[in-house]
Length: 84
Image 1: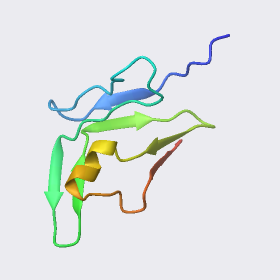
Image 2 (image 1 turned 90 degrees about the horizontal axis):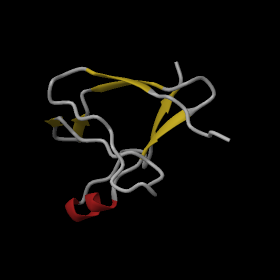
Image 3 (image 1 turned 60 degrees about the horizontal axis):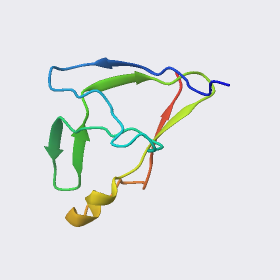
């Protein structure tokens, strides 16, 4: 039984990094920030990627455990990427 799905993605800039898993046993993929916008209210990071989540699925963005070293947190604790 094959439980894999294909997620289409496109690099929007040359600096964009293809999502990878650090370990074969990882449940999710690591994203790399390519841009950073700092305001007086928040810091916004961009990946330079566009993704197409298949219908019936959802993508979740969670802060990596290393983020705790920098007193940063996702504004609503988790990011959601809906299909279409």
